[in-house]
Length: 191
Image (cartoon, rainbow, N blue to C red; front, side):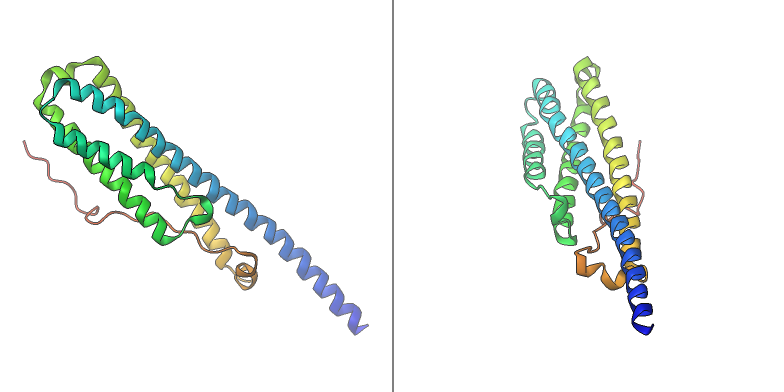
């Protein structure tokens, strides 16, 4: 009788944990899918940059230092790839640093265009600028979805009783994006 009760309790515990295991697998897949979308949007941005640089180059030939900086930042940003299995704090920080360098270089490039009214009026440039703006919005959306998926997943693996066995099955916490230094300070706009 006592042995039967123990076996029934073990069977119930195993069935509950297997259901929870499946839930963790689904949440982990959601994190991986969200990460793939982040990478997809960053790749879209990287693909637009050569066209933007070429368009600006035609107008701003003496701004070669800025154009080289954008090209170098793009090369660095696209050289850092992280698979979903390699997501950890250190790798995400390297990835984010390279993307932030590219963002800074793009800001410099767009600032240069202010000195060239003909360039700002060029339809190709306007189109590329709109596409780049849309891509930046897509990047922000993809990062937001990744952040939500990671929060759901990390919360699930830290809840009791899952926290007891999540590590046994390789369900480790996933890293979140962090704001870059100084992001809490609003930029000054002067006219």
